[in-house]
Image (cartoon, rainbow, N blue to C red; front, side, top):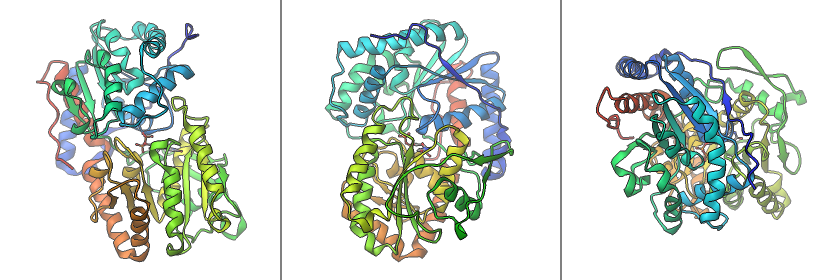
Length: 492
Ligand code: UDP
């Protein structure tokens, strides 16, 4: 039974950030386009609020992107706000089922019938009751992912401009995908526009109002800002992932986005046999939520097959603390399954493979640790079985890391095989995955070249500036100043 009557939508406070920060990174022409787009959006919004709604404040790509995109929007003079809807375990079980099915995966195999619809709509109605008191007919709502889809018709009825964004999808349409869209269709087709990451993810019934906007990384966030190698090592020693140099753990400091100092205080929960790896041991890294589709266990198996050829490298499988991600009920189960698999490995391998849960108490502290890991890693992998767009791939590319990714979903467009990373055609082919790792360890020149090209590719296609400009064009169009059309973007 739903007990959400007294539900409180949670508002996440956003500090404004200046859009001009991008200018030196993107060059004068792109900067001029960005500022002209911001001007058009400012005129179009004039007195209206842009309400973003999703279902978690931390953990996962959507939360990761909302923070900086809304900060720059505020910096550009748009009243952009972020609300997190509140659910209950049954609601998140249903929405995780929808998430898995939209990726073409069976997930928990449970039903998506009228009982589930009723449970889903009860939570939606409880959240809508509060949201409708905030959103006026002149306002704009940007709703993210299946968790918020049910809000579309309720908000649209008020006269507000409603856009729904799906951050997930698969190009391999199957019965699972069909069941998810059957559930969601009646809600999302009432949106004035729907945003997808890739054309291939758009169902036919939404194609007339679909706009393609790929995700992006924020180069100035705590997660992606420059970090000196010794600072990165200090942070990793502090949380327990690396052996401290000379055995002494120093205070681990980083900078918040506003330049003020921050300190990493919390330790990670680490499953490992023996001491942490030494600073000079090469590290292979995957950072992901503990989600079956990220295939952490497959990374472990693939690494184990070729570990002898990897120059003494260690593997770190890193995810958020399993209690920390509000809308992901499968985390604990997937993490436990990884531990069980890890226990079956020979001791010598268990010494070289660590499973790490990062502290989630402080968003910036968590981001600083991820930044340190990605910068310290010799190779970053993302061996997902499905992936709408791999934000972790883009983060590692920005940090000039050589990346091995599965050729699935967005990753197959993010990495150009052999130019800006290595793609493994079949994500379940552990030998091919292992061979890609060996190739990078045997050819450091190749690894360096891929890393440099990866950074350049991210600068050209996957920074927040491009993302913001596309949103600005979309909203300016919807609010009536221009025709509704996706902003032209150079195809990656
Ligand atoms: N992430 C994080 N801490 C963690 C694990 C993941 O900050 O412990 C972040 C990661 O850096 C990335 C996002 O969560 O920014 C994951 O996005 P991605 O698109 O790779 O996958 P999603 O979780 O959206 O499926």
